[in-house]
Each structure stands twice: as C-alpha cells, then as structure tokens.
Amino acid sequence: MKLKDIKGVINRGEFIVESIENPHDDYYTVKIKIDAGLTWVPGEHEIFTLPSKKIEGRKYRLFSIASIPEKGFILVGTRTRKEISSFKQALLTMKPNEKVALRGPFGWLKIQDETSPIVMSGVGITPIRALLKQVEINTNRPIELVYSSSGYYLFGEEIEAIAMNNPMIQLHKMASRKETAVKLDGVAEQYGNAAYYYNSGVTAIMRSVKKQYMEKGIKKNRIISDIFLGAK
Image (cartoon, rainbow, N blue to C red; front, side, top):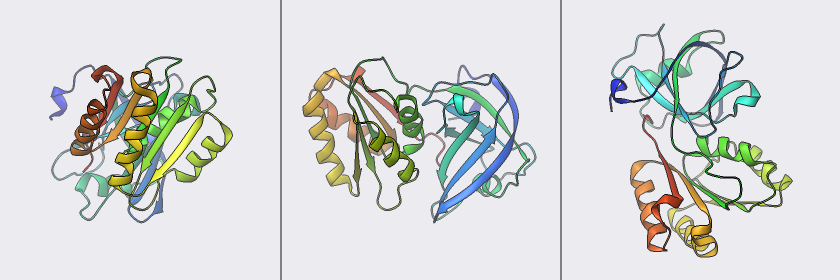
C-alpha cells in the first residue's frame, strides 16, 4: 500500500515527542503531545512520517492510537522484533521535543453501538487498549477481552486494573494460539450474533479468527477487524 492510496486522511501537522519508553525487551511506547482540539475516534490510526530524519526504504508507517482524545496525548505501542527497520530505528531514538508529522485519523475498529456485548481479541493490543479505555466505566453490557501473547503483555498491568475495577469486563490472558482459539469458540457460542467482535493483529491471524467466528455462525457485519498495515 502506498501513502497516496490511503483515502480520506487529513493533514494534521507536526507534533512534539514527549517520551519514548522501553518497558520490556523489544516493546516500546511513544507518547506525543497534541494541540487542543485535535481529536480521533478510539481505534483509529495515524500515518507517521519523520521530516527531520533520513529514512531508508518506506518513509512512513501506520500506527494505531492506544490513547483516547480526553487524555491530551497520542500514545502508540510497537515492537522492533529481530530486524529493526530504518524508520523504527529513527523513531525510537528520537529525543523529547523532536517532532513527528501525523496525518489522519482513519480506521474502522470502532465501537459500533452503546448496548451490544463486546468481545475484543488479538495480538495487536494498541487499538484494543483505546477501545477498552473508551468503555472502561461502562457497566451496561458484558465486555470480554481475549489478550494473546507468547510472553510479555504490553499495557498488561493497566488492563488488569481496568478489569478489576469493572465487574462487566472479563480479561482472559492467553499464551498460545490453541488456547486462544478455544476461548474464542467459547465466547462466540456464549454471545452469538448479539455481540460485536473486535480483532486486531497481522493479516494471517485476522483471517483465521474471522473464519473461526464465521464457522460458529457469526455474521460478517458483527466482526470488526483491524489489520497491521505498517508493522515493520
């Protein structure tokens, strides 16, 4: 996908990096100060470019926003994995008060209504965190979060605290694809098409999850997927 192919984006301008943290191994979070009035819907993305940096290869990346507008900052989470790209190397070594350029927001992983049960799942916890923050004090419907990770759970302690403070939120931490699949079968059988199913992750996993849900009788319009478009 090329930048020019992404429709509906708005030129947002340049914003200051407030902090970059490395909570574990190759996991990072980037916090960016925003101007008053800048807004987005939880679950959306921004397109990041680094005007002051020399980047080899693709000059932009798409990152889901982990924060909600009311907090006054944009927060993203990412991993570098074994081979870090030139873009991420430049981004993650930026100093406070250096600037990134943002375009957006856009995306489709958004809460659909005020009453339907919610099932959230995937290895892409960044947009899921934003959705969870949006509904963290909502007690009028069940919310199931199936959080899959082979090791470290980014935002894990915060998410556990949110779940502990809301009896309608059930957190299920999964360590393997097999046990995740079993849990997803269970919630699909429990809620059927009364719920919306929000999923975030790499393309292959999202296709597999969608197929799994549909085999359980879940309709396509109840499955809202968010695929990693700019992960590397």
